[in-house]
Length: 330
Image (cartoon, rainbow, N blue to C red; front, side, top):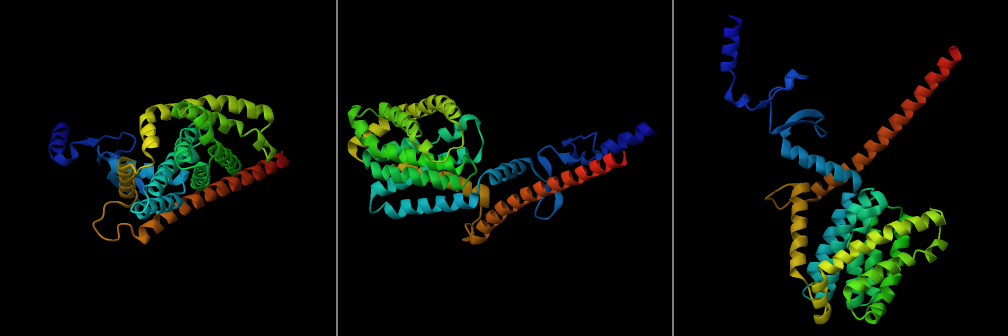
């Protein structure tokens, strides 16, 4: 009879439940479909099932919210993109500079948002690369302004490295931009060699900058420079080799607006828009309300971290008090 009842029960199971994941630890979750995921909804303060792909996207966005200040990223991106469009009909050179600034700004974001050994992600950006292009083709002062802006604004979007280190790096690159056009001519106009020279000069500029407040001892400074300089030379050398032909043509014919880079930047913005705001046919797809939601989420996560730290500190204090009382009773 038991077998019969089980047979009847199995046969009565709906077909929609056949493709489910069995969970021996939590029987109530046995009816979760394979393509669904069980999460806590922060807005409604409840639990719900959502598609696994959507849960993964939420996780990626949640991680990004923690390591970067997205409101600043969005504002800088839209301002630079707007400047590209506005300046394009009047000056291809200015539009190209703004386009390079946008791409260099994006390339620096992983380095200011994630802590990595020897700041590898920070060193892998395109700031040096585009600084060299601008300094050679337009002039040293333009390259200096470009690198100062990119270094400082990108650091405002993240947490790494320290402001002191970024400020010194901005000064070092700005000085190199002022002299690299002359060095480039002396080296015969070879882009690859000039890129290596730029990298070495940038490192050497940190020696006189140690007259400013320092965070490490001189031996530690030398070890870090000896470790990071070969990495930086290799990365910048690869960029120079990969884009050498493009740069050579750019230098011979003058600075021209590159539509391929512009279309690539447009695609990145559209993908980011869909990921953060979703797809909407209404005119309010880029509404202030949606942007405010991003701001609230960023501030909310910061408050959550502070609340957790305060709670952990309070619990530790209470635990210490209990231990002291226990010792007194003994």
